[in-house]
Amino acid sequence: MGRSESKQAYNDSRAAQQQMAAQAQQGLDKTNAAMADYNNKLNDFMNFGRNMYAPGGEYDRENTLLGTSVSSGGAESSADQLSDYDKRTGGMNAAQTGAAAEEIARSNQRALTQFLAGAADDRMNKQTAIEQYGVGASALPADVYGRIYGTATGGREGALGNETKAAQTPGFWDTFLPALIGGAGAAAGGYFSGGGTK
Image (cartoon, rainbow, N blue to C red; front, side, top):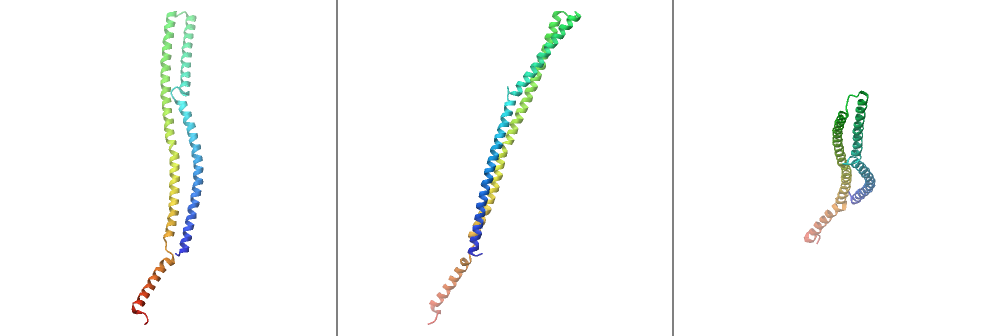
């Protein structure tokens, strides 16, 4: 390959490397925008999940309200039923009615405690699942950037390698001229050492 061909190969490789660098920058800019949007949406989702399932959060408040409403409503309804039964039948005295109502209230309180304990356990499971999801989802940007830089680095090194090889390729005169000079020197040396015409 002559010097002009080597120079052309070098220039072509250099232009290709510059074009790849420009395209890589465009791709990186778009990726940065997409990753910023992804991170914002992930943060919104995580904030929602953390607020919903935090101790004393929305999930706890809703279950506490639901459980206490059912429990107190059930106790009041049972007391009303016992009172109505006593009035209709005359079969229970006030002490028996009061004791039965208290036992029903205690039973409702045990049920409420069990319900709230189950709700707290469920809340903790959901909170853990949200955090685990966040850890997994937050790994995506690093993976994306790793793939981008790996591809860009490989392309750049390939183009630079072609440039380097083209620059190292000797041209015609780089190869022929030293031989020509060496031959001329040998001929001149022979001439001056007495091998020439007298």
